[in-house]
Length: 270
Image (tube, rainbow, N blue to C red; front, side, top):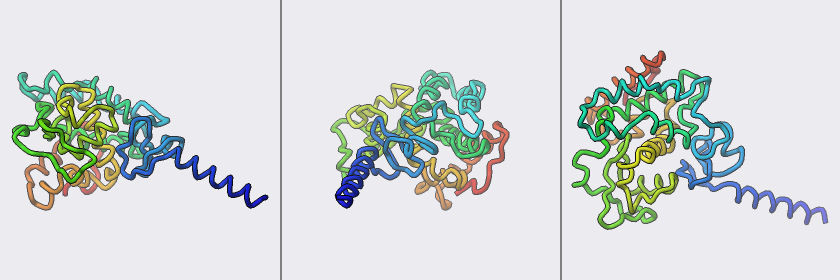
């Protein structure tokens, strides 16, 4: 009898664990699930508690280590970037600090690097890449992107839709069907049938950038800024391929860490 009872209890524990979590390393979680600090989707304190990277985390407000992202990314800081664009840039009226902060509510793990200085370095790194990718928030759409084919049919779970183009859009220039697909699934929009919404809805646009960051870049931030370059565009720029591009990203990063009053840290290039 005792053995049977123990078996029943073990089965119950296993079922509860299965119901409370979805094993999906590196996240890209469905709506309602948290991305744990180890990169898995699920619910409960183990996933939504300490170190939660994305989703309905227990903590909120985009703050950590005594640093509030909203306090670091001031209107003056944001304006210092976007005011360097020409008045006729498509991104001038599109990208706003308010849209960034709104999207940030869905990614409270952003900027949680441990100490206050680590948090500021992550914020600086994000905006350094955004500045470079968009030309100081000038571009929403990749230049010449509509003429390129960014459909990889081997990703059968994210089939390309006829007539749609998956070129770079948004603050981090989301590209390829295999990025649009999981981003849309996680954020909650029909990304494969309507990828263009990333270029027309500022909140969704910033969410795609934060989604990509939290799933592909956040985990390497403590390895230095150079690791974030590799995570975003390393195959095209690192190892001497495009030193001018790498240097531009690094200079933006150093500028922003200086503005935030922190050192850039080690390993800033790739």
